[in-house]
Length: 359
Image (cartoon, rainbow, N blue to C red; front, top):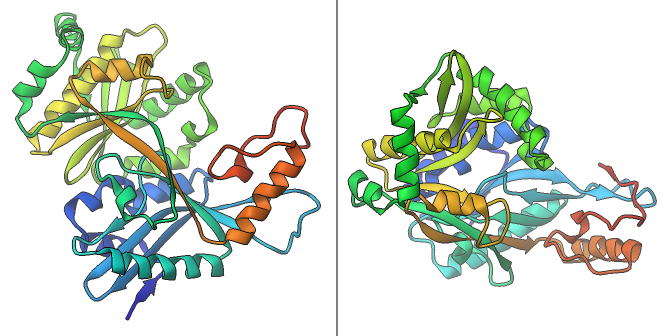
């Protein structure tokens, strides 16, 4: 008999993760990580566990209100489920087969419809390749490449496999006296200021900008650690890393304007060494700023000697009539078909009717 658990407390959420394989307990799936994004106003924490005997399907993320136009039915509260910034998607028990997953997704969809959830947008986890656990009718799209440095053969092999560009940057840092400090007492407060200035300078998108409450929650999460480089007491560069049970993830970083790239190289090398010292399988650096294979940030990350992984996104529709209706409304207002998976969220062309509000 299938059992569905919703509205899990953080404690129950953690216990549910502990019943899954080690790789499925990665930092991105934890209640604390989702709550850090909820504190930023990105949505409400969402966690549904579907189980049958020893089989489990678990979906985590944010439940986000769907915008509506002024003439829409304001009594119909609609939502979608979205992975937080980073990587997520479904996670399952080791023995979950396709027959169970078919039944579990059916129950999951029923519960979502009852909650007014129209669809789910998943930023899939490149290391888990969890698109294999999606329902057959899911739409999966390759987005870009990410970089992964394998540590199974040890730190020395990783250093030898790195490009001379990276080794030269790290050696330059050592020559000029760069010191990477972990657990800096005032690091988080200074990093928050540095990061906010960097995002403004780079005109970063809204989903990469975080408020104080979000940083405060992130700093308290198990496995989340901050590395800092200071000069004369001033924070020159810093980066947030997420150390999970299998991998370390490069999460956020910022440099003071005018600070050299070698500082970031030193931060990354220090995190790589820290991950190796803890016996982790590898270091995931994420992708570039764009989908281009020649993206400068992607090439910089590749200089650590990693291999490329496929980062994919996916759509699972839970209420097809409602989803089609929302996309049709967008098309009627713009005169064209949306290209985004969550088509009703695609920004309207300049000059088209705007004025959307949120439930």
